[in-house]
Image (cartoon, rainbow, N blue to C red):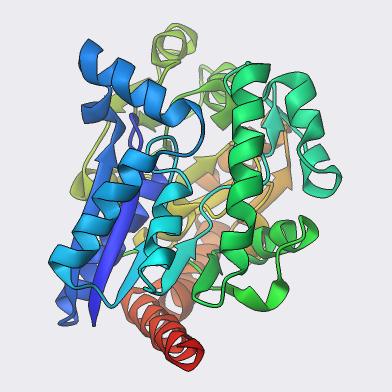
Length: 388
């Protein structure tokens, strides 16, 4: 197959970027022709001139310039199918609309909730919010949920109204990484039969260290990810806590950290594997209803036990008390207590780690990821041929 991967990379690298890159590598290693078109926020917004131009193009929520680039890419690469990932803020739904116009099948991974939530995270002011799931976009307009602006939120509303029929097209297949995402989109009115539940995979190469110590938290350093509250709750006399990543709140995080906290900054795949191999516990403290939780399965592959909030996709990834620990969202004291218990109890941690590794091999490995992805592509191409 000749497969296109279309993605808008974030300024601060996160799970969506890593999934898009890993799937491209996986498909290429299996012998498919893979072409990537990536709109990168770090590049597109680096200089003042291009930044102003791209802000203007994306402000309406429908970027016709991006659509032209996408169509030229499809023609030059002679693509059979295009797999889209994040579309915000530069590609917008104009990209998939341009693909549809060329009668090329689309597979879209639902990494976020932006199709019906202006913030894309089902949160408002750092708190969980699902008003727009069933009530439509009017609450978002009232609160100015896109960038704190009612004007920009209004442009998002108009763009989403224009885009909504696109996701119901015969040539479009939607991938939900967890049952939680599937259910949210179904509640928002998306056709259930068009949504396939397929978990992400990881091609992490484990680097276990027999001298494991402490806990690690991995991801974007910002308040909504719970990092600041976690640092405040982590006892000064506890084992070491390692923070992997960067983000808008990194300076405040450093000020809150105790002497037993270490910051590594962003790491490549090998560096993440090394930190997971050295840690006893992975902490996931996000206050947002995450769609999946890539680090949860990477911890399972690496032998670190995950302790997370029962929030969004984590409830699909972790089997409570069997392949990890779940505590109620926002209970930082409970999360820290669970982590400290696991750090002290080698027997409990070992049993959970063993079961988590087996679940990873069965559901989240490269082997499982390739099989499920190829199955979806073949079905999508077959449906497109039948509709032609």
